[in-house]
Image (tube, rainbow, N blue to C red; front, side, top):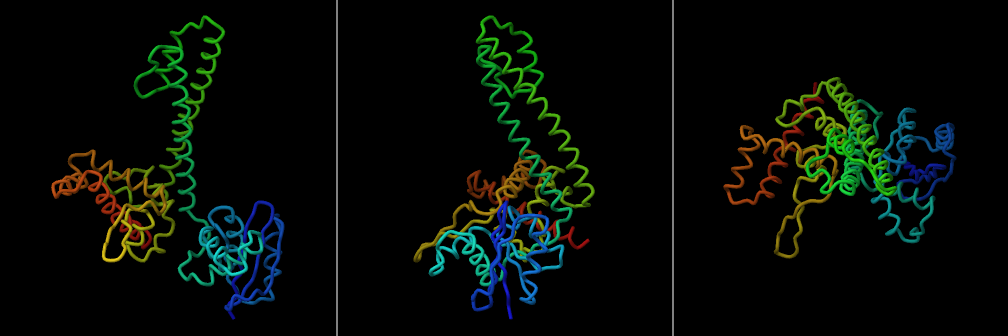
Length: 340
């Protein structure tokens, strides 16, 4: 008998619902999110026999619980929240939004969707994903602080700094400025605080780059052999891809990365459009590799780009073609790394 246990995870509690192959509910439990959560769930599920756990957003809010279940030797599936939501809305008589219905929807989605990703124990790929995410967050925070510092300097000195802002330029401008009024003094003090924030983030970014370089080197990846792929981009490519073996073809990988066009057809009219789907962080990393190749006149990517433009494609279309070319190369290298 097939038993699927769907779990709707939350910060304070987890609701689990077990169903059979006919979608008939076999049991339900709600446990508090404590150090005993896994033991309680396993004790409750023991009479059900062989089972498969389905956790909503196993890479997000349900990460810790799913890893604990995998560590206990259980089989766990990752159910996307959007898929579970569709099942709940379309299910007859189960459209009410509450934890038991959510858990039931997760279980039904796992039962009827054979292509769901199995959760595996966290490994070095997870380390790289965490480092890539942290590096991206630091970069975003620095951009935000620099924008505010630009505005603050423009209110102190006409024109402010008209180029890309470096901490040394801001130090020089603020050192030459002598506030006169209380308003100018307040603006000056706030600009100094923003400058301190920029310096702190610069130090954190340098440390982040060092950690990423060490982690990528420890992974033994061959991705850095690709033109335009350094440690930072290799970290993002590996971390956000996860286990590349879950993609049976390079086309599936390109679709996940959002570099494959999507069909938008009706009747006899067949049209392909730019995909906005997929993992956007992975898409951005592939885009940066393509841009790095285009900027170097002696690279194969630049030759490929110019050939596509000569064939009549626009520059944007040529970049999209190059991104797909890069995606295929990344997929190939990741498979080689997996086979080592």
